[in-house]
Image 1 (cartoon, rainbow, N blue to C red):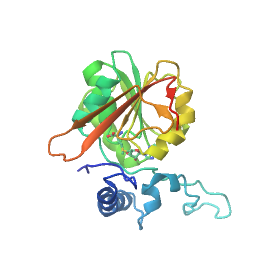
Image 2 (tube, rainbow, N blue to C red):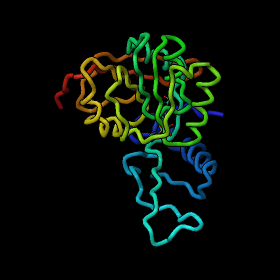
Image 3 (cartoon, helix red, strand yellow):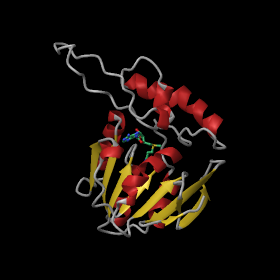
Image 4 (cartoon, helix red, strand yellow):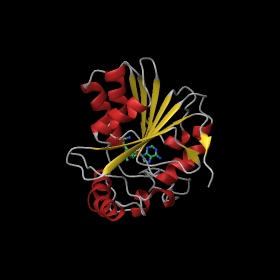
Amino acid sequence: MQSSGKPCFLGQRTASLAVAFCLLFDVSRAHSEEGHSSRRPGAVVSAQAKSPDVPTAPADGQDPGRPQKKKKWPDVIYVPTPQPVVDKMLELAEVRKGDNLHDLGCGDGRIVVTAAKKYGAKGTGYDIDPKRIYESRENVRRNGVESLVTIRQEDFFEVDLAEADVVTLYLLPELNVRLMPKLRQLKPGTRIVSHDFDMRGAKPKKTVSLRVNDDREEHTVYLWVVPWEEEKP
Ligand SMILES: C[S@@+](CC[C@H](N)C(=O)[O-])C[C@H]1O[C@@H](n2cnc3c(N)ncnc32)[C@H](O)[C@@H]1O
C-alpha cells in the first residue's frame, strides 16, 4: 500500500494536510514496520532530523562501553511521485538510452524503473529505508530491468554522483539546498529534475506544472542543467 500527496513541508499550501497525513500514516507505519516504538516527527520534517545522534541499543553480546553504530533516520518521509509526474520529469530531463540516472531517495523505485523501461536508461536508486529498498528491488525484478537498474541502501548525502547524467529529486526545499554543494560538482550538462521543490539560489531552466487525475493540487517539475544560473535574491 502506498500513500499519496506531498512530502511534509511546513509553509507550503499543503502543509497542514501533509503534516497531518504524514503524522497519522507514514511515520507511524514506517516506524512500526521497522520496529520503532515511538513516532519521531524530527525524522519527518527533515532539516531538524539530519542524523539524530541517538545511539542504537547495543546488540546482544556487544560491549555496551563500545561506541555503537548510529541509526540514520530518513530526512524526509516516503511519498510517491504520481506516475504522470514521473513521466513529465523524465521528459523534461530528456532522458535517453544510455543515460545514467540517479534518484536520491528512490522510494519504490518508480523513477529509475520507468527510465529504464521507457528509455533504456541505466539507473541507480538510493534509499535509506529498508522497506523502500525491498519494494524498489521487487519493482525492478517485476519489470525485468535488473540489467539496467541498481538499488542501494545509502544516505543520499554520501553517494558518488560523478557518473550521473540525470539526477531526480522529490525531497524538500531545504534538502535540495543542502544537496546543492554536491549537485554543483556534477559534470557540466547533467540535468537535475525536482518534483515540487525548487533549489533556492539556482534558477531553473524550465518549470512545468501539471495536474494529475483525482488530484486537486498542481504538481510542479523543475529542471536545472549544470552549471545552473545563479538566481539573485
Ligand atoms: C518523498 S519520497 C520520494 C520517493 C521517490 N523518489 C518518488 O519520487 O516517488 C523520499 C524518499 O527519500 C528517502 N530518504 C529520506 N532520507 C534519505 C536519506 N538521507 N538518504 C536516502 N534516502 C532517504 C525516504 O525513505 C523516501 O523513500
